[in-house]
Image (cartoon, rainbow, N blue to C red; front, top):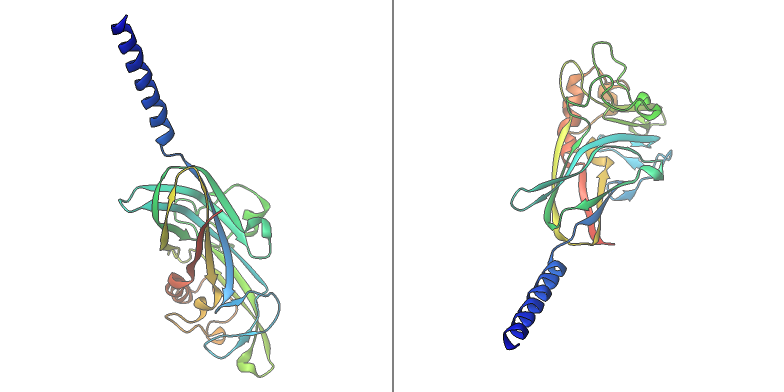
Length: 250
């Protein structure tokens, strides 16, 4: 009888250990990425010539539409989890502001990486679903395939002299060149363990126009889709366009 009681106690202890052990297992979580916009720290406001470029042109923004892709979270040891393959953002459409991933593996994430635009594996004719949005983002240049990375459009007052002109900063692959940008940003390290997190990315539109190259609307004109020199300038400037605004538990 004593032996039986000892065995029963041992079995109970083992079952409790297993139960507690299960409770201690880390759980997957939920992460949402938000894409917001400003102009040198000022909130983005459409159709108002209130910003001034480094080249000296007051300007407004009429529309901002773009793709980000291969959005990935990285741990310190390089372990990666892709949150989103392709996301389309229209700054005028609140429904496109964010995207989410469920079942994000538990871990401590220290970086987020993504592609501004689309890489060559996706950026081909028919590479994206045949929705009206993607059709409207197609790159209509003979000999070039795929889609715009971005349509940033507006008006500017040429050197503040009252001469209002249009600008179209359209980026994409052209003349056989891939012009997408690989972005990697450090995060305030956060741990996923059955919880919900929000990562807030901010695009500073002003960075397209001044860092490291001063973009002059007058120099390149309103149509740059076949101008690889213009695309190279924007590609260089685009490396500092995105920043982390905040990371917070939700």
